[in-house]
Image 1 (cartoon, rainbow, N blue to C red):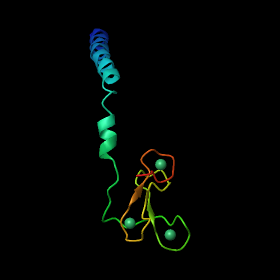
Image 2: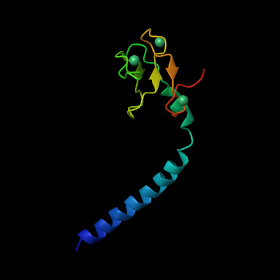
Image 3: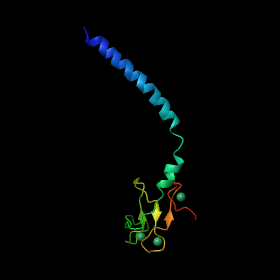
Image 4: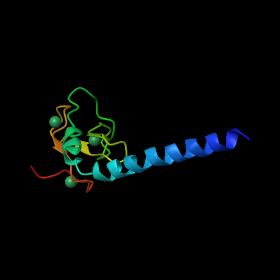
Length: 94
Ligand SMILES: [Ca+2]
Ligand SMILES: [Ca+2]
Ligand SMILES: [Ca+2]
């Protein structure tokens, strides 16, 4: 007979603790613009992994891991020089 009140108390405490965290989650969604800027691609050392034009030479990177290239080496020096930051699948104009 002792267990029931303890479970009820524990459940009540958990509910009380969960309520404020929900409020915090809702308010913490705003500052994501800064984090997005940090993920800007800059893989100077990593070799390209995608051949976008079919000539047998890798010339693009899938940095986001979504299966689509988002960085390109357009001048063949092995370093990315075109990036898709807006997610439309094409290099963005500089
Ligand atoms: Ca190629
Ligand atoms: Ca390049
Ligand atoms: Ca783009």
